Image (cartoon, rainbow, N blue to C red; front, side):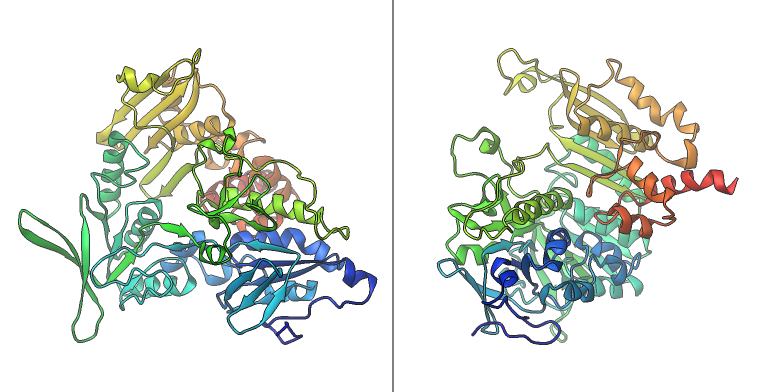
Length: 553
């Protein structure tokens, strides 16, 4: 059965076999309708409107694309579902996009270039883009079904990936329930802090001496732990979970069971268990089609699936690792990062690749615009009341471990060096790992101005001052000298990046403000700044205030 012309939310018409415009239209099917797919669709809309592309987008959820990064904020009542929306379905349909929601793709027929939907509909394609994203990891605990396709979580146990999950959390927080967050990663930290800030009881459970155990060194982890406790988050460290206990009458979650210590079983009672145990790329559809996979769907530097030039993958589900075994760029590729910024850049680049294939050439991909290569180590930023954290790259090395500092150093290359400063009493800690003066890793806790400067230097690959203590002074005496609007000193640099997710600079936001944008929402619509993790909203407000201050005066 081929897709027919049907109403809202159902498969629309495919191009006719007659007429010059229909024959030239490149049939593109996008599987997945999350933030990354929404960015790709946005970039392709002009070609869709002119008839150069016939675009079909298929999403499993009823809701249109929304910002999953801010689902936790929705869960604690800090934002609304409308504010999370990234696209307008009516506008897409008006532009000619064939939008199919609340429908799942069950099979990709590579030989015939078509996809099969759960309702039996088939759609033909010239190019297929897999933007299936990732899914929450369900831990293998007694009382939970770890099958990601049908987890069947008990009442009172949830992940935090969808709007429905956010509503479950919102109900618990508004009622002042006890929330247990299982997982010491960045998403677990953010969720636990948000729950505590809204007045509910929050307990963060993780296996290891401190949260972010894979990303942060011992000193930074200790200071971070104190900051979390001061924010009202109870910590259960070195805790290995084994199961969940549910009420025998209602089946609702009752307690998290921990591994017995000294022969005595332990448990943590609560009303809601929030699973924040990481995510894994959603690659089942690609595996069923016989596409090569590792952690994600293997794609080359042009985001094409291995040995299948008509199929692409972007975002959380894609792993950039070309078929050439000796490729230096892919040798140490970390796999999917799960970060929205790099995924959006993939979507923007792929849109240019697809647009170059619209001139009636259906079997030969367009010429590459540039290679998609692994980026620098990802930055982890956490901003909350009383908790400010920035970390990246290699930061586990001891300053006096000469062997570790020299390990992996190429001939003629200087060894790593480490500068470290700690003030646990006041919740401050800084560690900088450098090679030839350039940052290769860092930890900064409780020092927002220093963190801002280090992040800028890290992103630019710039050399640090020879006297590292100059950076520490940014949160010392200089902290009493406010910058205009109360923002970071780096906001006075027009080239400084404000929104790292979308790559928007101070200058671009200032130009939007000069054109009349006077709120974060208006700036976001004009520049896309603030549509990712939301960590830049305060800086955007500062830039707006700086622009309108002269007028107010």
